[in-house]
Amino acid sequence: MEKFTTLTGIAAPMPLVNIDTDMIIPKQFLKTIARTGLGKNLFDEMRYTLDGAEIPDFVLYQPAYRKSQIIVAGDNFGCGSSREHAPWALLDFGIRSVIATSFADIFYNNCFKNGILPVVLPQEAIDHLMDDAKKGENARITIDLDSQTVTASDGKSFAFQVDPFKKHCLMNGLDDIGLTLEKAAAIDTFETRNATLRPWA
Image 1 (cartoon, rainbow, N blue to C red):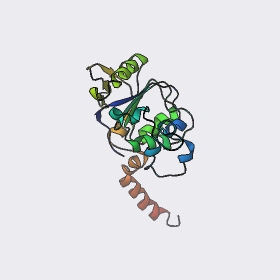
Image 2 (image 1 turned 180 degrees about the vertical axis):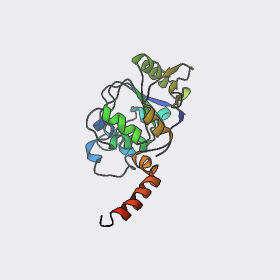
Image 3 (image 1 turned 30 degrees about the horizontal axis):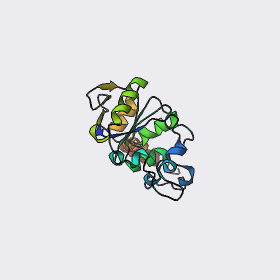
Image 4 (image 1 turned 120 degrees about the horizontal axis):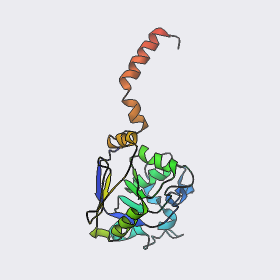
């Protein structure tokens, strides 16, 4: 998993509430267990017409936001079903952070396990960052996980809270497998000792 320390980039404004996981990645794209390739179908029903043509008004198709790595959104982002494909699709598209007033719990936790930083800020901060994001290429937002701050292009900074363990994992690029591999030496020692004490096992 890629480490997350500091990210500076253009944020895409999505002033919608209750963006659920089916909006993020519709159910018909859940047939794969691969974490790659889902980015092309991120927000599929909002991005494409029924015949597959791009919808130019959709924010991620506007020239300023085509390579956005940050989304500023409304309340309750990631609600709906618990599909882990949602953060997979965001990451595959290139999104490394979503900023909102609240997130669905399962989606929130899945983000950390997949290298995405979900940032919770009060509505006043979201309003400021949303207005900033609407400036497009003229504005860049900086997210610093170490100092737990989000800084708008005008220099105004907002502090956010994050669980220390989740912060450690994200800053060190540790998903569940990575955490397990940190204990590889202890696991090897146990397996060697167990093979001696319980050769039949």
